[in-house]
Image 1 (cartoon, helix red, strand yellow):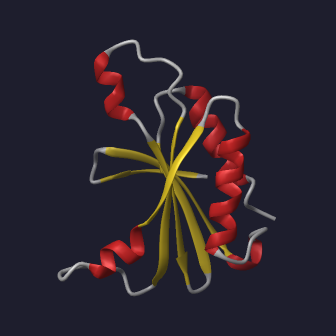
Image 2 (cartoon, helix red, strand yellow; image 1 turned 30 degrees about the horizontal axis):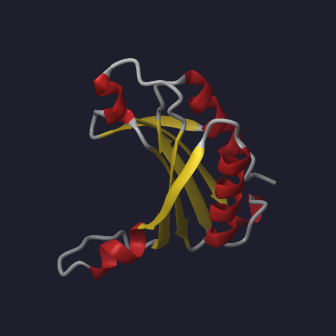
Image 3 (tube, helix red, strand yellow; image 1 turned 180 degrees about the vertical axis):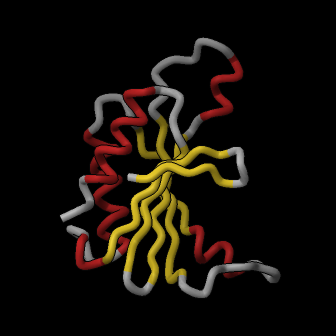
Length: 129
């Protein structure tokens, strides 16, 4: 796993893997794997899976890196507490899966809850062979 800040503001974790180093051969298999991990978690709930690629491509004006073949976002929530109203602003979470010709990138924004953060790291690393 690697860390980076996008636009100097958004801290993310990501894993780039050649397709030959993955347990899965398609983006749909990775999405199904993530959905299964969420459903089997005692707190997490799967909200939706968003087809980011198709949505963006359908816009009259769009900009998609030519190397990107597909992009799906698995939307979930770990929210078992709501101590202040503003906490709702950092929910739900999203795990992005992006396919390029020879690799997949799985990424997510850092979670404020350490257990949620660790679970998403574990799930992401679980996609490796």
